[in-house]
Length: 282
Ligand code: C2E
Ligand code: MG
Ligand code: MG
Ligand code: MG
Image (cartoon, rainbow, N blue to C red; front, top):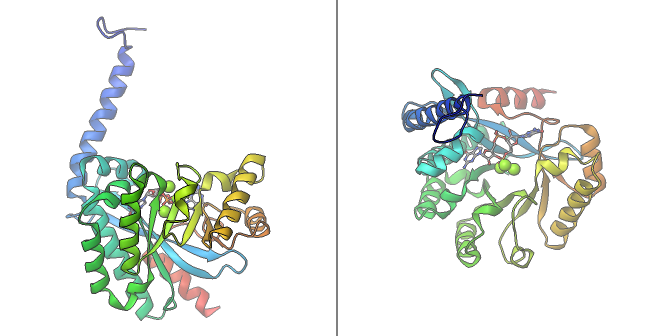
């Protein structure tokens, strides 16, 4: 294989890397205009009571409709937005849009007044100094549904300075926000701290749910998280429930809430609205 004389890196790889770097740089500059050009949109996925399928809330998941590249998933642009700081602006838009939607659905009677809306916060957003003020403003603006906002935080946002994280979480809790610990089991939560943090729910990461039937380890981890939640008085939500078998197994383990393709994929607002109306009518 051809190699560059100096670097020893095969030339085809260099080309490949160059292409990827190029794509990343292009996306980054495009992302700057994504918010102002209204290219971002939210999909909504229901959170349900496993045994009945009844909807207890929604999670808002951001998407980017790129003018030439089509739909881009958050896994591809959120890390980028984290690095260059654009996540703060994107996060603000997400929060405002999700709460606007919740208010609209609640007022239209499409959802009950206790239905929750969950918004994801990435590490940089969680650590941003303007977070509390931004949340306070949105809650003021959407006062009729202010009690129904949930923020999902991952463990990685908490590591480093647990005391500081606790202060931040307590302050958010003080605003009346519900806090869920996302992707639980994949990070580094100190169990020692967990009981002191004001989380309402633990979300079992989908990697454990996916292999529930095949892997003894996943089963053991899911069981432990469900027991931990019970003893800490926290709700437990299973992510990524795709089959009836997984649902039944989770119910058997004592897990009350779930989310996943088995119940519904994340859908654009209009489609979710149709699904909700059809349910009401049946
Ligand atoms: P997450 O918060 O853990 O979201 C769950 C992810 O699992 C979503 O992927 C969802 O579409 C997907 N999912 C749900 N049910 C199933 C299932 O049954 N099977 C499988 N295979 N997947 C399922 P998505 O929408 O691509 O989002 C990926 C991640 O991007 C999210 O993970 C979250 O960390 C981040 N993200 C999404 N929207 C936002 C946002 O508005 N702000 C921030 N900061 N992060 C976001
Ligand atoms: Mg989440
Ligand atoms: Mg998750
Ligand atoms: Mg995740």
